[in-house]
Image (cartoon, rainbow, N blue to C red; front, side, top):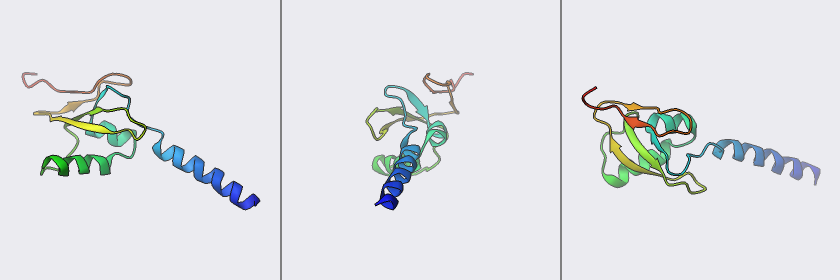
Length: 99
């Protein structure tokens, strides 16, 4: 019995650390920011597949956080130049074309 309780505790710690870094509802994120934040690679690639996006590079793509418990994101647009990290608690954004 002791072994199973310890195993469950360790499993709980592991799973919470894997999924702890969800996006914040309403904020926009560059693909590179989402990859740094947590386990978003599969979700990004699935979104690309769903919308027919052939280019799998996610660095210069802007997503918005839907804010569910699973940290769901939605594709916003591919930045014509680069995607800029706005900093903690702020929206990421596409670099203006005229900059």
